[in-house]
Length: 198
Ligand code: HEC
Image 1 (cartoon, rainbow, N blue to C red):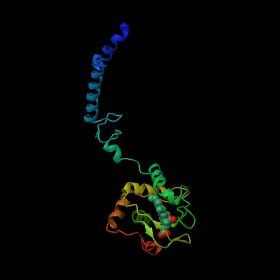
Image 2 (image 1 turned 60 degrees about the vertical axis):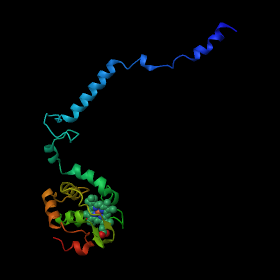
Image 3 (image 1 turned 90 degrees about the vertical axis):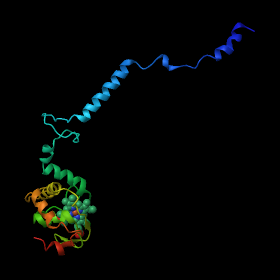
Image 4 (image 1 turned 45 degrees about the vertical axis):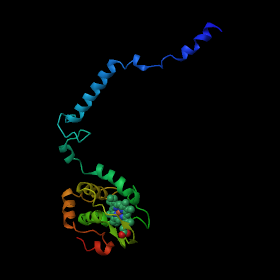
């Protein structure tokens, strides 16, 4: 037997490797503590926006309440909303789909009475609808879950795009129309009922 062989049992019984001989560096703890303090401050401190105005930290993108209240109602908003909510049926060009979804271009429902258009958007339509001599018989969803400003932006957008050039619809008009028909829960019954609206 060699010496080396005799030592083998002892070698097996060495302690398991242990990390405590190399603890995390102190700098790491300092860094972690600094991050926690900074995070707490970031949440608690009401964030000012770029111009130093103070707002609610709930508004994570730092817009203040006053800036939000004055959010523009017009082409930009309306166009975005139209793409998200309407273009799927009426198409991005507002031309609709023949026989299924009516066009919004050169159509009196869109460019005529603004209050009637607001009513269409608030409550939707179901039933035979005459659009420039073509009868549609589909379902136009109700959009009353949108805000007054959103409906005003949508109505203004469809009235002034693709060659349409009717007046803009104000937020106040939408609020008034919503109030007027607050108890309504069903869609308008096609041209028959819509023709009775002012
Ligand atoms: C699910 C498909 C669908 C969506 C989404 C939709 N519509 Fe309609 N819309 C219709 C249908 C179908 C009609 C015709 C209803 C009928 O035949 O009674 C219609 C009719 C209309 C009318 C009156 C008819 C005309 O051609 O002018 C207007 C105005 C209108 N929609 C605007 C909008 C706007 C604005 C939006 C987005 C907020 C929108 N629609 C979203 C399907 C849709």
